[in-house]
Image (cartoon, rainbow, N blue to C red; front, side):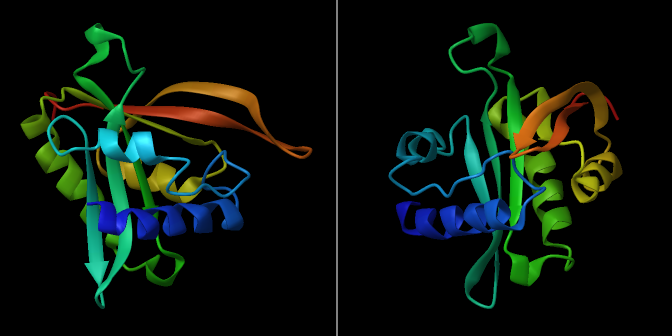
Length: 160
C-alpha cells in the first residue's frame, strides 16, 4: 500500500547506512522507487510486511527477475530488509517462511536472492530455508576501496 512506502524506504536506507547488507551506497526515496513499488501489486509480485508495536519491523519483496524476459516470468528475486530495532528477533525468519508459503500462489517456481558475499547473516537465513548457492561474482562490489562480491542463492519451489 502506498501508505507503507515511506517505511519500506526508511528500512532500506538503514541497510545502506549500516553497510554490508546492500550494494547501494546512497539513500533512495519513494519517488526514486515509485515504479518498482507500483510493480508490486499483489498479483504477480508482492511486498510482505512484518509489523510489531504498530510499526513495520521488516519487509520482503518478490520482484521480477530480469524484467521483460517472458521465459523468466516464473522466477522472482527475493529481497528482505529488517528495521535495525527488530533485528535478531526472528522477523527475517517469519518473512522468509511466509514468502516461501505464498510464492506458488503468485505463479512462481524459483526464487533467487542476490546478496553481498560478506553478508553472513543472510547466507545463514537462506541456507536455513533450503536455498543453495547458485553463483558467485567475486570482486564486483566496490565501497570506495573496500571490495567484495555477490552471491546468487536460489531455491526451486517444487523441490523439497
